[in-house]
Length: 315
Image 1 (cartoon, rainbow, N blue to C red):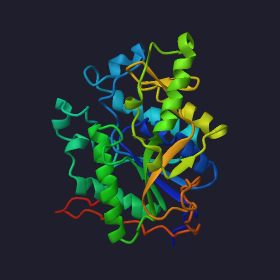
Image 2 (image 1 turned 90 degrees about the vertical axis):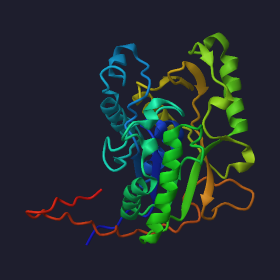
Image 3 (image 1 turned 90 degrees about the horizontal axis):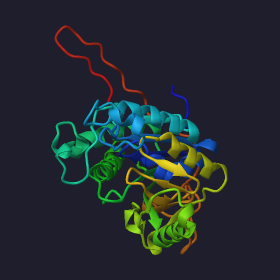
């Protein structure tokens, strides 16, 4: 019989390596440190990303096209910083290729995540859900936070997978979408502007450049990232060196526009009941859920191929 799973289990679904650290690094570090099972599913290798360090520019898609394999290593390093041991790629590493921004040619390439059949991809994710049986699932809103095709597709796949897993025996109690309250973003940029010439980046982004900004009233949960959890988040972001430049409480992507590094992370509950009193934000994503260990679903067997059939392997 399979060993029981930890009593608290969280699954995060992200489009590319680095998205998890930017959006949920402190949250992942907190729950991993508390003994919860934190499972990350990343949908692509991020092959089409722009490369910040000049000495690694040769990895880019238009040159050697080896950025994806490099980012696999960056993701592994980031997960070590967060204390997360269960991180996977959707289907398998490289099953779905990174898409570009909306309207670019890469989105029409065979194998791009944007072109993936949602039910097929969601089926692979549903298998993970029924295996780890998370009480909490975290992903993006219907716009993917900022309109990137892979983020939108990750949202579609995650929400469909929740439906498929429910039909297969595990109904995820709570689903959250990443978000950031507008007041917090504006305060963060005010600190960046106040730094003036001390700002480490040549330009400053705008609130509109931050994914998932919503009115404060839409936020339902806040996970504090002070101390060790915030430090782990910053370290995880630094591990994604091809994509992120971190300098103190600020960071920038390849556009070199500074943004505040938000240690405290925010969420919008879209499925399930809040565990906080009416009108208050949750400070624990597992609030209201009984902490009960669960026995994992039986592992699927791998059939031995006969002379006239191919092997059947798990997704």
